[in-house]
Amino acid sequence: KEDVIGTMLDSYTWPDHLTEGSPIRMTLSADDLEAGSIVPVRLEVHVTEIGTVEIWAVNPTSEKRWRLEFSVRETGEE
Image 1 (cartoon, one colour):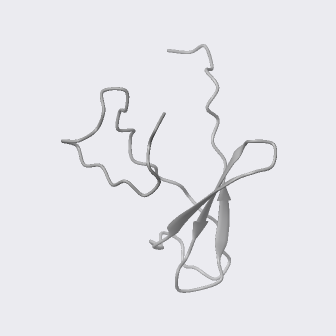
Image 2 (cartoon, rainbow, N blue to C red):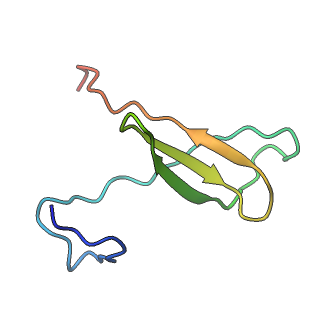
């Protein structure tokens, strides 16, 4: 595609081949947080040398980082 890096899209300008995904909710473990705490994170995305995508949740107010892993393979279940 000829997408330009940094282009911001809203729901009115999305091309037909893009669809909005569901919200992502994760349970992250941290010894220094109270159970049920809500932690704001910033997502960092990196493409590795072998072409895989790494996604990290980073707490902007601390040094905490969590690597997020998702299965994107079809399970055969519907």
